[in-house]
Amino acid sequence: MRVLRANLDAFGLSSPQAEVRGGDALAALRAARAAGETYDLVFVDPPYSRAGELEGELGALLPGLLAPGARVVVESDRRAPLRLTLAVERERRYGDTVITIHRHATEGEDGRQ
Image (cartoon, rainbow, N blue to C red; front, side, top):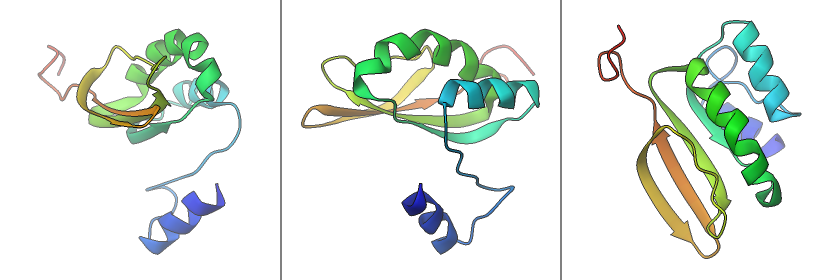
């Protein structure tokens, strides 16, 4: 987390534009949903061994938290990738790791305004 914060500082980004949150991701997403928060960019890097068990709840929670056109960047094991129901914009493999960039629909793409 220290490196993430240092990178944000280097770009001159601070709250409310960018925030690093530690702890249980699902609990943080539930709290964000309850607070009515939305995001433009989300990074998901769960322990590879838990990706499968997190897939369903992440897939249910994330869409309601994403602004139109938001990106979700997922890192997972290529042998058991974490798959979300969001559209895949790009996917790259690096050894045993797969990085998938998902894009949330923009207004009008999914029929909502």
